[in-house]
Image 1: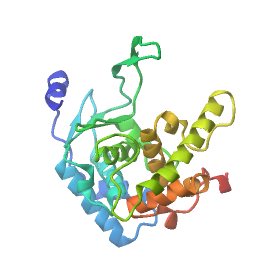
Image 2: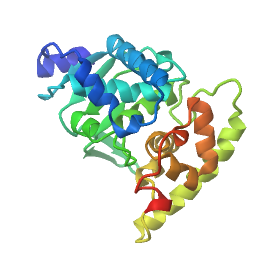
Image 3: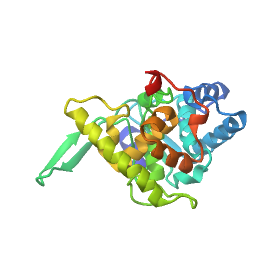
Image 4: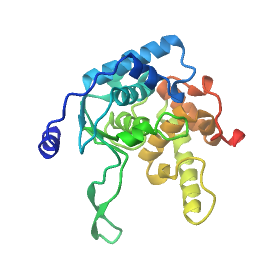
Length: 266
């Protein structure tokens, strides 16, 4: 994959190394408010480990700054702060576009007819392969409005760690898969009903309707909300919030204040 991209777009120039100001900017995002100093230091060390162990490949004219790279690494490090970088597996490339990219895909409809479609994407994670991000969308992440393309795509990588991309990452030994299913299954069914009602002209769900695309997207989107808007997630789906707190071995609800996006304050 890397060779194909380089042949198409040329070999990129060396990337900047984040300096102290870049790390201050990245760790100054609202997403990291309330992190104790010990956790903040551990997060930065983990982010530096992720940067050192991955190749970042700009394509289509992307020119990532040191702040961009620090922001990606810091936000990617947050979900595995208590788990370790090894949870992301052995893939080694992050491909960076300047803005949303538009791949052409073939899909088969319910009648067996194959269609070629082009749909703008802000990020993508390939099983066993690279993770792709739009720098524009990276810049829009971490502001505690529920949107975080970095956490979303890295959550997919966690989901892929045990094979099937199905919204069930490998659980810790003290977690019960039946309890996970009992939390996520009814919540996903309920959310799909809400998304269908919204499509029919009903009220918009408080959580991004994209979560209804599949159980895998439900896990990834709700991971975004777990870190960005934990009060909203806990109010909407408390059992899911509890399972995610056990999986990620942390609970941002304990350090973050509600925002204007949360039901109690909106």
